[in-house]
Length: 346
Image (cartoon, rainbow, N blue to C red):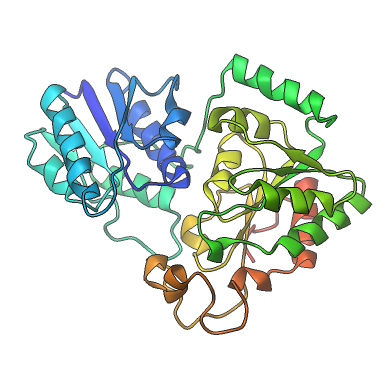
């Protein structure tokens, strides 16, 4: 019988944790009498504090290379030595994490969630399929969505900010121009052009300060009556986004964050493959039309642009540039109209 469960999510990004949420939801639902803990990184793990599915969030430490793998193994080994688990599930393949779990003596372990992955299978679906194949979950299709649970206090703080910015909840398109690496960014000028087109059609626009406030400020200044949204904590950001009418985002964890609070998202993809890493329906993904001879849907980190920071085949900084503001505008209008017939992929 399974009474204590640990889910190990150490891929590193906020988006990675959110992509694992349907698997966490499925495990919790399949073993309703068990206590479920999660080991992950800050700041993403903050999103699970107070989550009704999770008993305890354990934060792993990050260390400079080459000690990072050693530190992660030590953190996990210490947890497994002090807590007794009946089931450990991990989506992490690096740093010897699977070996630590498999040698821990836990009676049931799942460390091969990435086995038999398919190029156009979303990561969330892959994890759920593998858990079904391992006999861990019995959730029938459709798959459970990624869900987050802002508190009443966080929603109150978020609503006060909406009021302070003189924006109307449910009637504002939010822009997130930020991405963790340069080659995943949609150009600043494209965001500005899309914003002007939407403002001309009567939409209010807000731009998230994020990790690069000067970038967000320039975009907001280029759009009539657009608002600049100051940096917020991750949980308050989730609560604030929950009242947006739609989010237009670069390929980043914030796109998945907005989707997890049930806001429609248009996410723009370049070097990474939206068929695997895109936001879930009814949100939509626009993939660059550039046919890259080096694109690897199964592992974008082996592409040279990932390390060089720019496209190596053209004079463009990133292939995201090939997604035009006009294409994005058409996609935004479809999403705002709630067009369920649109496949959400271009």
